[in-house]
Length: 279
Ligand code: AMP
Image (spheres, rainbow, N blue to C red):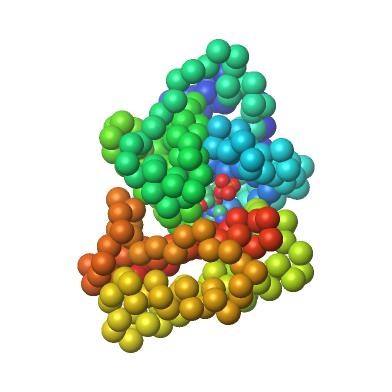
């Protein structure tokens, strides 16, 4: 397994592989890897000849009071996991390598970037689209793998790929959960035992939404009320948003009969968690 720290090395290694006619899959991550990340790697391994994984905690997608400095960094463990999965290449640049002094160019997908997490975390998606654009230019993958766990990110990046004609296919993989339903997340490491229990409120609320929708309820207002009812039972968990939106535009909808994304974000202690469900 090759580990590259510089753009130039990663770019030329990927170019060579493509030149040899190999199908290249890219899995962008911020490290602190878990089974959710590994599910993307496995999907990429199944569909591509070579798989590159990027590990980069991207400062431009964190707000000034967010957890950039304390975000878990477990590079050696991550490398061991990826080696076992048969990954061919890791790209793990330093911040100065990705953002050399004087870099002032950003990619912004207007509209959709200001909804859901974009509304709660101003500038977050501008950071995501900028770094993912850079990774696409470095690796030029045939396919890029993302998790449905970050549904708003999927909407923003899919639009970016369309709008900017990136010559690649986006592959979206299902949410991987713990046995009790909690969506896997690098940030789950922050939770105390008590918070870990409280964190189940998110998946429980979505479970109730799913039940109500299966029983025929299609009013977004009613379904949101259902979810909020579950959060009301755990008042220490603070809702950031509970929303029913169009999965592509992230605009609020009033009726779910043509499909919907049920999305929740909430603070458990100081940890902000997200989860969602496609109806
Ligand atoms: P991150 O390291 O948090 O930036 O995540 C890297 C990629 O892994 C993103 O495309 C995420 O959506 C995806 N991912 C994170 N957690 C999960 C999960 N529980 N299930 C599926 N994909 C996930």
